[in-house]
Image (cartoon, rainbow, N blue to C red; front, side, top):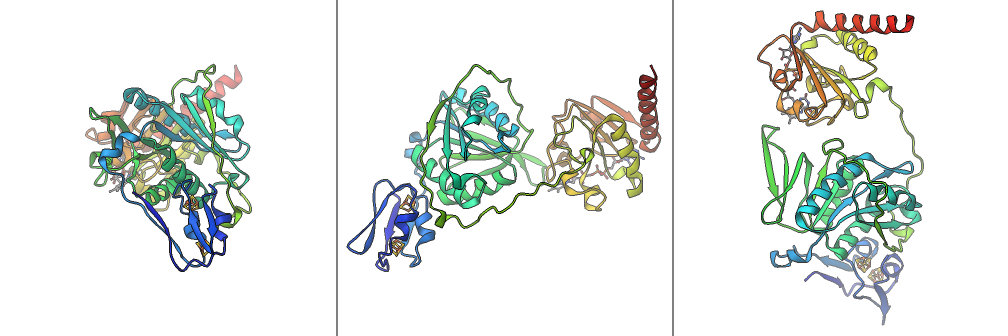
Length: 400
Ligand code: FAD
Ligand code: SF4
Ligand code: SF4
């Protein structure tokens, strides 16, 4: 049993009473008393100036695993709409929930976001837990972790999926640490085994093996990068059930405030995550100044420029343009790899592209093994010719 205790050092100041979002504390005879409504969210622990509150949270024993039911996707929204990665996770969540015979739910946290519930239903959520509060307007680690960990403690889902975005990577480990449970980051596959456990597949040991990981805690939690899972077709007629989760957050408990948001807009040629066409280069390019050949072809194709890790490590491209295990996962219609050998760490980031063209002077290069079209040749001859032909084609279209 988990235990929350108030030590003798409590002075009865009532700060914790004001901070508790679940009205679970009262001060009686000069001491704080914690009631049944406590969800072990830990806010009061942080708030108490006397450090008088302690929480002991033992690991959920195996015999209580059956209490945990349902698949949750923690949805992310930005600028008034749900991010695509949440729909991708719902697609996978739906498959998992079907195998388990359990319900698929989305958790939507924010402020004035009720309008974003419907698309979650269209992409597969049978139920949406909607948490709205003005203090949840912008993502902050503490507040979101408080809300989510107390919801998990209360509703006991068996699987919780997070997007491996900047916020998801921040939130998921915080929640896992609060609940003392495991978390598998950057999964590339998720399956249910014959004991109804979540098998979390991800590259391990520098990407040289694919590990299948089983959690010995509940819920089983995983993060998945954008574009790793395929989005399913939305069914606009489907409406999810909505459960509004009331939280009474106290501004005193919010340690970080978002004062201003600044968006840095990068050039279209540098935004590989959204690009439908990517021209990527590797160590075969040889010199930084020859990157102009890659940019010229990307421009002629209307695509973005990516690169393998050595190119980024040399400082020739920024990290946000690196494709692969320690860079971005991309899923364009066309991925053209020039002078890239095709190591497993690179392939992990691009192998789900719809169509792959590889140019390499080594006929044994592994990238040629996964390419739809493999060209054995010198990129310094092929790239300029391709660019020229595309420009000529565009010019003749313009004239006709
Ligand atoms: P190389 O392997 O050196 O290949 C260069 C290729 O260019 C060769 O196949 C060669 O035949 C060809 N070539 C040379 N000249 C020409 C020419 N004139 N015309 C045509 N072809 C030519 N790598 C990533 O890319 N992304 C990652 O996110 C990533 N993460 C990693 C994480 C870890 C933990 C580790 C250990 C490694 C990671 N790596 C990553 C590095 C990875 O292992 C490889 O070292 C890297 O992908 C190799 O890059 P490359 O293909 O550009 O270079
Ligand atoms: Fe007691 Fe701490 Fe609560 Fe104040 S904040 S009443 S000292 S437990
Ligand atoms: Fe309230 Fe959270 Fe403290 Fe429990 S742990 S008493 S829910 S603030």
